[in-house]
Image (cartoon, rainbow, N blue to C red; front, side, top):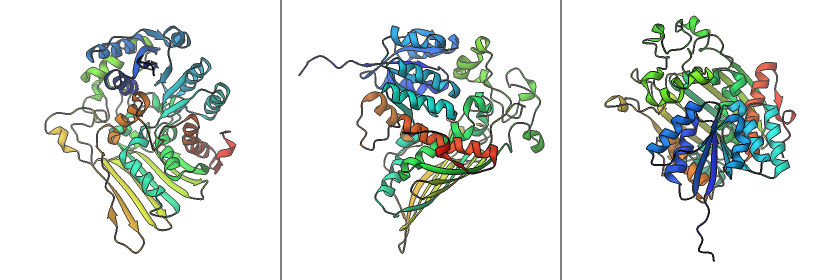
Length: 442
């Protein structure tokens, strides 16, 4: 046996917005014995510089920076093993395909991409190159979701006949999708793709099934120019420098948050990107209220609803089976405190403000002819997506064994997209969509 230490894998990251932070911290702080961050790439130098300054605060060395157009040459020059893709969703396929063709594996933020053509391109390149894509579906690693999968796999409610799934984004978290690049469907694919791919992946994983047919309704009810009808609209384009935004609970004040100032306000001169757009301004092309009916390969059906303007945040998932019913209920915040209305979800609050909003979670098993019982879930925490972020990055970067096989491949990423892509098509046509007509999935 060799006494030589195992070489650390070399990672380079493209897309240095806020989505990159979890991956960067995990590599340099938590798994530096297994992984090494060696480069950043982005269209914006100021954002890369901000991340490098935070690396130094963590006690790590700054890494070389490259313009996004230098991505492929960066992979060679820095001898990269794995590319991390955390860029704007519509650009994922560009970097994923380039990395695969250069002989690298890829870890990408979800969603894997935003539309049918881009998704097929990724799948075809995986087949062509034999390289691997991992989609960072951290919700699979939440102890609550693991327990649901275990209960279903153990047959405690028998064969699943239907799933009822409701997800609520409150007016703090939901509004944020309408301030930034996600508000343009060409960038994000809409919430059916950007947000709901998390949820549709969970249903695929829980049921061990794939979607077959989808029918959906979706519209813009609350945000965009609808805000004038509901009495919320104020006349400004972006919050920074706008007197009209003062006191607006839907405004994001970048200058008040040093992190957001460094990533966005101080960086916008390079690319003109405004992170603090008015959620009720014209130009919103995504939906905020969506209803989906899906049929799966097992014969089960799902009713799903996503609301992006709720007074509280959380979700309910109910499984009806041949031996009973399983219910998952999660309240992430029971209301939006006026002190926190203009903060981002998860932003640090101080003093009594931090304790105002409450949450809870429970799993209830309701077998036929027996009293319901609560299912204990060890390891669950309200931090980091129920503890999922740390558990996922330990598998991705720390080499931790994953007996549940939670890693999501390009195929899993495509299957998670299928329901949302079909829903978007159904929004447009008013007709049911057979998912086999959209993609060829191995």
